[in-house]
Image (cartoon, rainbow, N blue to C red; front, side, top):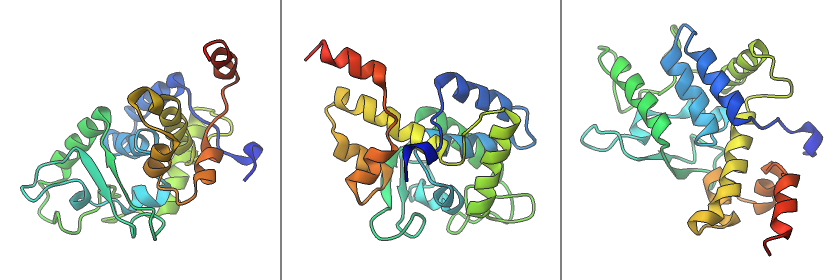
Length: 200
């Protein structure tokens, strides 16, 4: 996939605008979780649709600090992974869990995190369409359901060395079997390229 065809990454300002916009929607908590799973965990549309509560709750029914995403919930093979939950996402997940876990029909063993008014789960295509609708309403040209994921991977790549990590850690967090795939996701920053020359 060429760079020209890739989804645009989101700036910090755009992320704030999305979150502000979602606070005015019919299901603000659920929608915030959908968006934050994309931009703070790097989830694909399929992974957002397939995420179950049991993947982030321990045996005592307490929310863990990590999401244990299974291969079947991802792209299969080795694309499943363990991802630390960002504090902003955890707050929204906790709020959503408190809303849904009180329902009589709720069963933590098979309940999906993202549901609709009519169904106990949603589809990847619905997630894709949801992102397209939000970005269209905000007039974000070139943004798609993959924008949050690209933003996450780019941001992790920029900051991983400051915590002693490497591009391999970015690959692991992205759930990519091929390092080249991860590298294609990362947005090039010409300003950083200019700065780094003067500090080597």
